[in-house]
Amino acid sequence: MKNIFKYILIASSILCAASSCNWLDQVPEDELTLEMVFNDKTRTEDWLAGVYAGIADPYWDHMKFAGYDAMSDDCTLPQAWTTFGWNILNMVAGNWSPASEWQMNYWTELPKYIRSAYIFMENVKPLPSAGVPASEVELMKNEARFLIAYYYWLLLESYGPIPFSPGLVSSDASYDELMLEQTPFDTIVDWIDNELIETAKNLPAFYINNNKFGRATSVMCHAVRARMLLFAASPLVNGNSDYADYRNKSGENLFSTAPSEEKWKRAADACKELIELAESNGYGLYYEMNAAGQIDPFLSYQNMMFTRWSDGNKEILFPRPGGCDLWDYEKHAQPRGSGGNGALGVSQSLVDAFFMKNGLPIDNPMSGYSETGFSTSSDLRTNTSWSLGSPTATPGEITTAGTYNMYCNREPRFYVSVLYNDAWYRQSSRRTEFHNHSMDGGGYDSPQAGYLIRKKVSPDVHVMNNTYVYRPGILYRLGEVYLNYAEALNEYDPGNPDVLIYLNKIRERAGVPMYNDGNDRITVNASDKELMRELIRKERRVELCVEGIRYNDLRRWKEAEAVLTGQVEGMNVNATVKDEYFRRTKLDIVRSYKKAFYFQPVPASEMDKNPNLVQNPYWLSNE
Image (tube, rainbow, N blue to C red):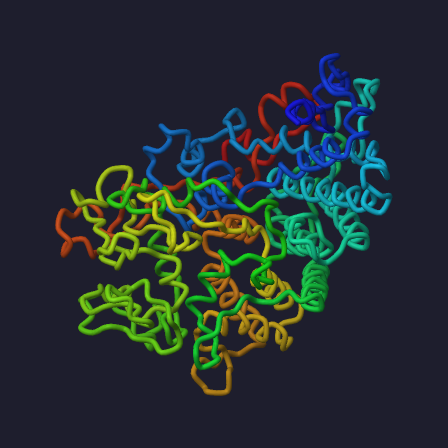
């Protein structure tokens, strides 16, 4: 197996081929040959497992290496962590260039997996005597085909137009054949779209054998397709005038120069197809019910991230094979005084985004929100048995008397997602102490804005006891698709009843009043396109927080420059006594986002190798 993975890692790619790497087709004499690999069942399966290995961990990879969470306004991390390899924090501060290292390095890494997938498709064969029938071979080929399309989408999402020539590059290809220029964005989208549609026809919607959980399915194909088409319809790449002069060496425009409403329809149709395919095969939002047979919004939202598919979590559309078995995420999200590296935090901006329990945003005068004083009584809710806020483990006790009013009477998703100062911390049977010179506060292993991430961290994790629990690595889930569908549909068909229906499905599960639910609690004009766009975006911010989605939302909406630039707000974390801590304060954390940053730069080393590449927009002008 070691030799197989060594061979996979040196396998060349289309993009690598553009750097004259055709010598990689030669297999050293001391390595396994392709014939040896594909005449053996275990080695064949190991090869395919190696192709799957390019799928990122949506916990640690999305936070530290890809930076989708760290670079968004969902999270705050200590700049001092750059000393410990957190290069992504330099990007948060705006300190990056084509010569910088993006630790995921998709430009050079993903093509290796793509080429390995093509090699697999060319060489895999039935092994009847070993129990590998022709039907299994066809299934595995389609798994590899899915992974090729998925990896091309990740490249496109990260870099925009890339050199693109699907298939294996011959070892005797000429220099001109290897020096590929970038292909227009929409051309690649169309190719990936067709590949995913065709591949889905040859894959099951799910596997009865739970050992295959995470293997490619038709639902996964359509999930990737729907998210891609939503991105392709969005303002960043749908007629963005900022890219009007961005052309390849042949003079082709690499992005569309005129907005197309049809792209929104195409995205909406893809989302609806996915929803119908998934729901007809038993997928659905994850629910836990209370004793009265009603939705328990706290446990539903919390355990949606932890419950296995085999235990009834049919919201998972695209999981990472094998889940995520590294526990750095949990350790860095736990208070320092309880054995964690407690600085994996959320921002004040995210705290402010959560609704009140009456479903209104905090800036609505009718919401009941207050930033002054402390509560005089407990907040007891009858619709849940969630008790993480209760020192006495009283079911439904969400906050106790003496809680800062900013954190009182908020919606369920807030309490599941955010660990705030003076909150009850069940694992250590104490309250958190995030003010300076306390057991959890001060220095770089403490919440920089005053909050730790609670979402995606199981309440049964206990760092000091080295107790961790399984959690699936969820890359795509049905809740996101409902919001994707509502967004795309609102853009091309405002007032369509489905917009409100699918937005309300998310709010219902979250335990907040739905819009236009007949009780006149929150009435909106569902035909108002701009209003509904705002409501959908607010719901996405909360529902999908710290799931690696917010950063790409800000990119595709062209809002990253405005949102991800400036001084960050938080609590008064330098206060040495608790009473002075609860005050909104400008922090010594400054974000910077330039126009160039919407796409990763073509790595400078690749520009040096291939004269037919052009650098992504604004990187050369430092805008």
